[in-house]
Amino acid sequence: MKHEIWIDSDGLPSLCLAGPMGDGFRSLQEHGAALIGLIDATSHFEAMTKYYEIMGWGVYTTDFESDHESYSEEWRSIQDGAKDKGQLK
Image (cartoon, rainbow, N blue to C red; front, side, top):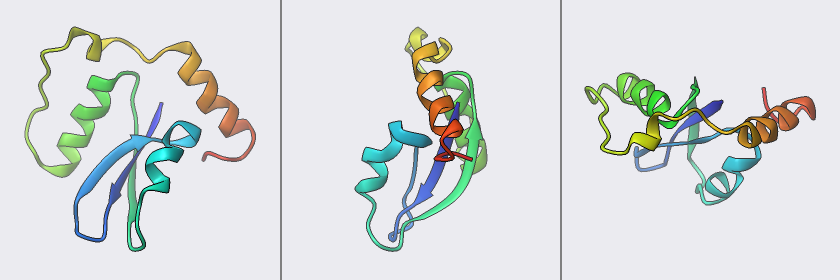
């Protein structure tokens, strides 16, 4: 699944899902926020590992085994549908 890396006007980074499942997050971004990168990942753990690498924060760790599980087919279908409608690159 695709994820977006955002930097707000204060320089604080954030990560959200691309497409409709990130709409709520993006609607809260104030003027001056910028999309600075995209990440493809099959799980939350993979997304956060790549995000930490990009941001230079060291190694991402988690105590939650569920973070290693692949994203659901339902979530992938939502993102694929947005891609088919031209709402996601």
